[in-house]
Amino acid sequence: MELEYKEYEKENAPLMVFLHGGGVSGWMWDEQIKYFSLRYHCIVPDLPAHGTSQNQHFSIKDSAEKIIELINLKRSEQPVIVIGFSLGAQILVNILSIAPGLINYAIINSALTRPMEYSLKLLKPLFKLSFPLTKMRSFAKLQSKVLYIQENQFEHYVKETTEITFDSFMQVMKENMSFQVPKKYSSSKSKILVTVGEKEKKMMHKSAFELVQKNSNSTGIMIPKVGHGISLANPNYFNKMLEDWVSMGNIPENAKLIEQ
Image (cartoon, rainbow, N blue to C red):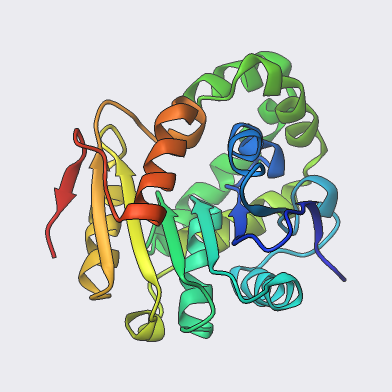
């Protein structure tokens, strides 16, 4: 089954692909599309089990292969830039491993790479008990604040959290919590920017460090005063960071460099 996506075409422009996180869909990139679609050919897929692709089975490997197929279909002679957040960042890491020369610039934002399969087995009964909460508007409101979801995006978030099935939810969680850096990631020729929020959990900091260590083309930064979701929490900061890094190789002055 083909991946659903939105496309904002710009002739003879670099291709920019945005991969969303788990539990949301392409709408999380609305502020980036407003900013970048004036100068870039932008594509925003809904990943399997999410949004308009919610009836598709999810796996990181299958998702990566579908994105590779989409990029090959849409690319020109211009550079290819791919931005991934959380679950989308894990898919991006997989793409870099499967197709090491496909992408020119990769922005890996908050990718978990420390497998937690034992924790998943312990948590499954708790997930089953608490899953009905995800259908409650009040619970969605609390979660949206943690995820930095804006007021104008809240109805999208509520709709999609109420529509996801328990089986799809568990499949996404299984893939997310068992992910580790593929061996071939180190062979990617892409220029890579790895980012993590200062307020994210320590396992996320360790994941960012691992990604920087395992590819010599990578630069890693820790973004101050933010948790999981810089592109939603501060779109202007994220957009400038992305543009400055792609066009000039610059990183924000207030970001802390992750040493290789």
